[in-house]
Length: 160
Image (tube, rainbow, N blue to C red; front, top):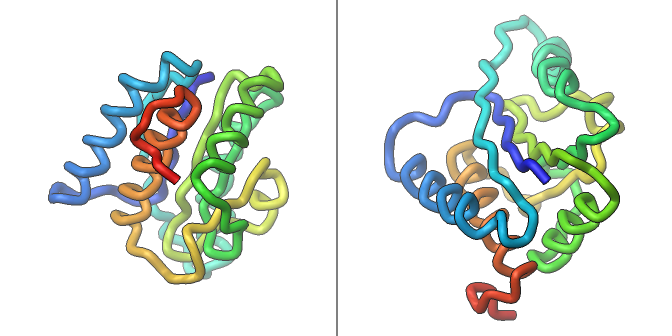
């Protein structure tokens, strides 16, 4: 299954970008053994619309263009489900086992995701009730994807 990350906004140079890159590189190396082919991060520019609803709608349309029957979508949103790493790994595995060819994980912009896009998502995931800077969310997502690959492969990186 091809795994990609879509993020509204640009990740500036710095330690966060370096750390996210390190975990995405690890995912790219560990993922194929469990059927996960990391295809990269696509950055979508933040909308310049005047209202939050319009911005969410515009950003969501760019992400929805990627949706088809062969694609599973996981949205990151503070109002999503707060699950553990093992449950996330099992969810990713189930998408692949059900015949999904692609998995898109989407990080929204400052205004979050369009509610219509949330309704179309296969999973809305939260990293907790706290609000996280976009750069740290990308680092945490990269690490969790790498961790999911190690959980699925039985690698000792994840110790419960």
